[in-house]
Amino acid sequence: MKMLLRLALIPFIFFLSNSAYANDEPVQFSNKHQEQRFYDLIEEIRCLVCQNQSLADSNAPLAQDLREEVYQMIISEKQDEYIMQFLVERYGDFVLYRPPLKQDTWLLWFGPFLLLIIAIVIAIILVKKQSNSSTINNNISEEEQQRLTKILNEDSNKGEQ
Image 1 (cartoon, rainbow, N blue to C red):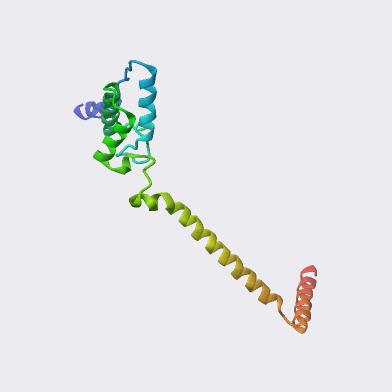
Image 2: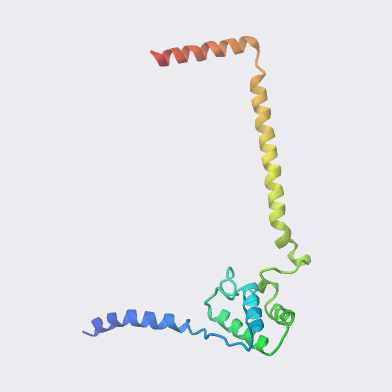
């Protein structure tokens, strides 16, 4: 009986634990400008737990805490630049979806273009190599060409029979 009761409680505990993460309370702003700033900022800040989601998209507890911190700074009339600088000082450039262009982030900004250029160069080399090999095959003597034609004709005649 106790085992049956424990099994019946498993779904209940599961639903209770999920609701613990859903306690992100709606935020109240004194004007639409503050609300727009808040939503713009949390779209530009990366969730440090999820890493591929913004604070607006993440349900992680840390993201909830960061949203609350951004909210508090906005209602305290802090400027967007101040809020972003605060987060960068605390968590590094990684917290930004668009990190600044500086020596530490060159690979991040120019790496994809560098890989594209390398891929194009490799493709050009392969195409040239393939065209050279096909040109070599076309440089056969007249005698070899006649012999090849004869062999191909014999094979096609055998296939028809």
